[in-house]
Amino acid sequence: MGILNVPFEIKESNIQESGTFSGYGSVFGNKDSHGDICVQGCFSKSINSGGRNGTGVAMLYQHYSRNPIGIWKMIVEDSRGLKVEGQLAMGTQ
Image 1: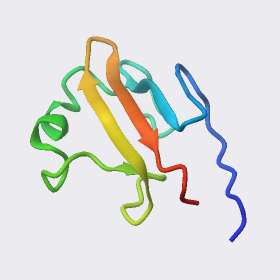
Image 2: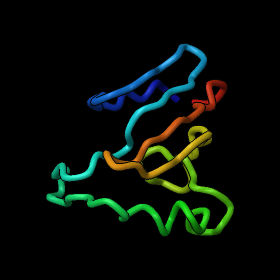
Image 3: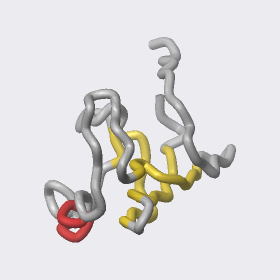
């Protein structure tokens, strides 16, 4: 299997060589590539219920449940957006 290069835009980040990072997964009021606009409160239910299965919100590659790529150390919704801290699984491809 080769290396997969995925284009993405870093809007705000704190990325370390260890695979830890922090920043905003979503910022309120911005229109995404599908025309959706997130507003304050839109992530509350998922965060408070522990994700879809109640076991925590999964960190997935491209939203594919078969492709976990790490763990979330913190997910909170603040006045700006969805603030996250995560740890990538550096030993996987």
